[in-house]
Length: 501
Image (cartoon, rainbow, N blue to C red; front, side, top):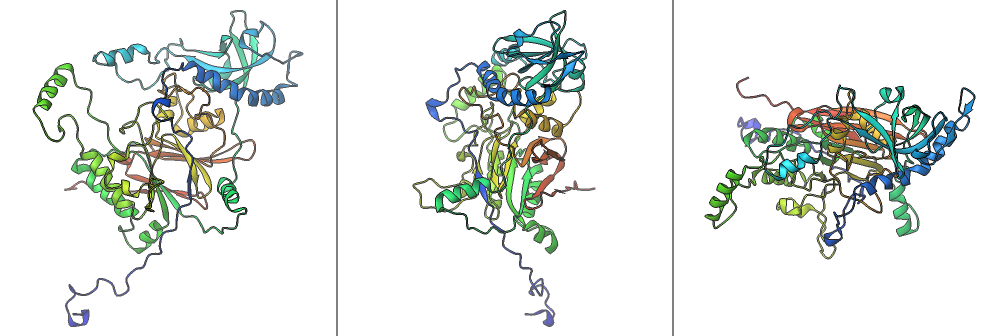
């Protein structure tokens, strides 16, 4: 029966149904920089101090060249600056420059006693928001393989340094043995690859030439901090996000704009924090109860609802969008960075969209569970991202500043986690440290931040990097969209109005 016959309930809702253009394919070429060795090849018995010496050895040639160019003609009171090979070769009253690793001796920095209290089931002290103190007892040192040198000067008060950053320092040694700094130099941004450089080179190797004609790139959506608890409070916001990403929400204009999204990145903390560690008495009582249960798991010990809800969300979105999934501090992954990919057993519904094994004939792809940090090429641009631990730890070393400030500093130090392993748990790398930055990204994002931020920084060789601070979705209900053709950034916010308001 038609509308003309008066029955609107059986008629089509629109005379002209809206036909959305199909989504464009996402050009996606991940790197496996932060994947750890498998099985017995993964060793934790190495000394962590070797990591700092390794970083110094790799960055020292770069800093030597830059410092020599910068200070070769520098004079002070008629004295010309000279280079010193080791920090312990600095002589009192001589103007010189030396390269070393910064070490911050902070009175509020955590120590091994905190870990011992956790091992012995004792209540740990409250988490520290800052490592620095207002007592003036904090000290900064410069070290290399020969020893340490305490450094002072107005330059320190004007600039923020953290443990692990490699710098060249110009100054003179004082009567008390300290090194008074008058200028510093960092390695600054490394070489930045051209867009499509890696994709074209790989295609050229395979085919002998590059002939593919690329279409206009779409947008990448970045969401962080879903923090799914498995309760009904998550359902509304997750459903809104799912409907938005799958072009089911709002009207035709919004659906057309959403259809330009070609990839979703979940930047850590997709699941909420697990329950706190139980006391000895609670653990003993739970163990007794669990022995009485013969089938299934004990819900008092493990709650599978959050993982099931995340799996369902991924399964709903994956037919429409490919997803890159990074773990975060609250996700069920290893604590030390680099965190390895979330295990596929967590996703019985959505793992069918993962890249199939090599011996399989399946062709379904879409879910890429990756490491944290992670880097790869999306639409030809080099993208680097983290779940937020590295930035959060650096912010504890400085009095003022936000995520974008420390992200800028990390890129110029050429190390995305300088405080690891001192105050940030890390795998003890020996031969090569992937946390060092060998190539400059075009996009650098950090998840689980309190607010959204965006900034474009430039390097000495005309490098341009888009910095993105991704807010927690559980608190801000915000999605960040990046146009991969123009690098324009926009945000979409979902507002959930409580019932009765």
